[in-house]
Image (cartoon, rainbow, N blue to C red; front, side, top):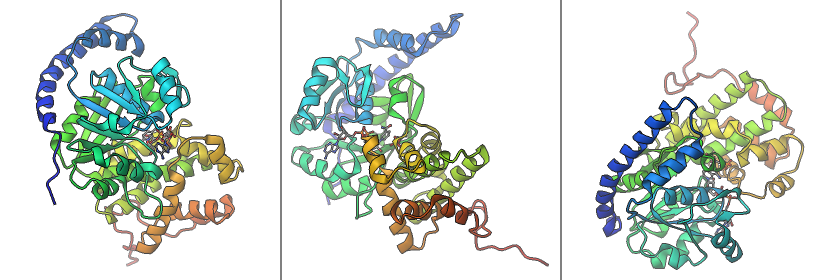
Length: 402
Ligand SMILES: NC(=O)C1=CN([C@@H]2O[C@H](COP(=O)(O)OP(=O)(O)OC[C@H]3O[C@@H](n4cnc5c(N)ncnc54)[C@H](O)[C@@H]3O)[C@@H](O)[C@H]2O)C=CC1
Ligand SMILES: O=C(CO)COP(=O)(O)O
């Protein structure tokens, strides 16, 4: 197999960007210093305008395509464009492209936000990806393979980064597996973290993780997206980072459902930490480093998604908890909630591999076997004596009585 390669101009671009980055950091520092000195602090919007004005004339060598015009693809395209990259957002629907070209607003997914004026829109996949350094893929997992198959003829040496947090239906493939299948010679990575799109669009400080075996790719993504309100951390545990993003959707559904029963903080804390135990147990079986689940893409994303009504997975769980059927809840949401499919995939995989995943099994019973939520929850509480952190004390160890 040929060795993965990056776009030939990516390294050159990175060298130029490093110089620009130093200048940019200095500008950020100046703006922040000015803001701190003011008796009445500036709002993020004022700060951002200040930064934009200062950075307006920086050269923009990184060329980026973002595939998927939903809320997250749009947010990342906007962020990288504001950072001075040359960005094209590919959107499947021709009418949406026309409307975005005219208004620079994504009416369906982010109607309250004017997008960066420099951002380009297209529904032509070839035009979107040809000659780019980086391609971010932000379509739902159900459309991921088909999208890669469509761009394959136009891939020469672009690097691919998955933003998708899910698993392929029926195959249990993660998006990185799909990339390796469909584009075996490209450098690739996955980006995942507590990244609710609407908060990012509102300039609420956020952070994420880029995971890849390629140091050049990690640096390219950090350079493209890192900004005053968005930090990009790096990892080489691709499977751990990717599983964190996919698995937490299951527990956001559980938390949304539990919230419909007015649970207290103790109960929320129990669900969150036992979810983390399940995630890391599953991750370790798949080859991930358990410590990755203590990072932004693990507990960070788990916390954000399980606490926020902005999360579509949480919303689905909440609607189910309030008595709606799955079909009604999906229809009402009208957006992607990856966890619905992930529950099925992970439940099946865990059963086959003998991995103890009681919350996932419980959700599966409620959603797909029509069992009563309260009874299932009470059963969960009777699951016997176990150790708290099994990487500290394996759960098979029983207390001795002598
Ligand atoms: N929205 C968020 O806050 C975040 C989402 N993600 C992940 O990003 C992925 C995309 O999510 P969102 O942008 O939020 O979804 P969304 O529901 O807002 O939008 C999905 C987009 O994909 C398009 N699409 C659907 N089927 C398609 C197909 N067959 N071919 C091409 N395009 C298709 C839709 O037209 C729509 O533009 C998901 O895996 C999600 O878990 C990751 C981080 C944050
Ligand atoms: O992944 C997300 C935040 O990090 C978005 O979660 P939802 O897909 O549940 O909205």
